[in-house]
Image (cartoon, rainbow, N blue to C red; front, side):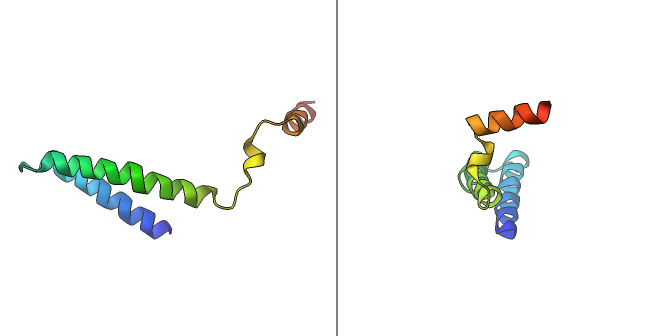
Length: 74
């Protein structure tokens, strides 16, 4: 999964950079395609990869977590 994320990131970054530096008719499409791949493929895959084995309850503010923070502070 990590290699797939890196592959799409490099493709996206390469497309954006090529769009900026190449003087071709479709350079704006290269930039746009790179941004689309970055936001609709790379970021969701990265988020899923980083959060797949985590418990969401550990990051939510609940009464128990507030009490743990207060006990830790004292």
